[in-house]
Image 1 (cartoon, rainbow, N blue to C red):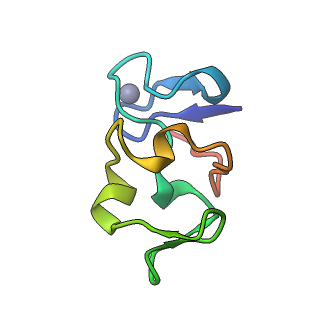
Image 2: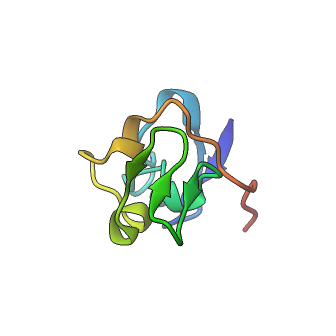
Image 3: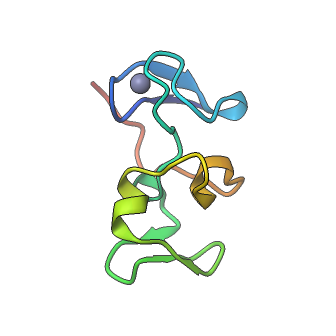
Length: 78
Ligand SMILES: [Zn+2]
């Protein structure tokens, strides 16, 4: 799956990358995933709470970084 980096808009191949090839931002953000409910701060897939800040700008230690159930809601366009 090709996704665009939320930070620099570079194209990245999601399956074998966790960070952007261009700017090294984390690619899997809960806020972009259809399993995440921002109002309840909840990942429906993993049944865990994810703080809004972390959902928007995850770190390497965040659960989303290597999440196998990650499904971006929309294919983002530039
Ligand atoms: Zn980037």
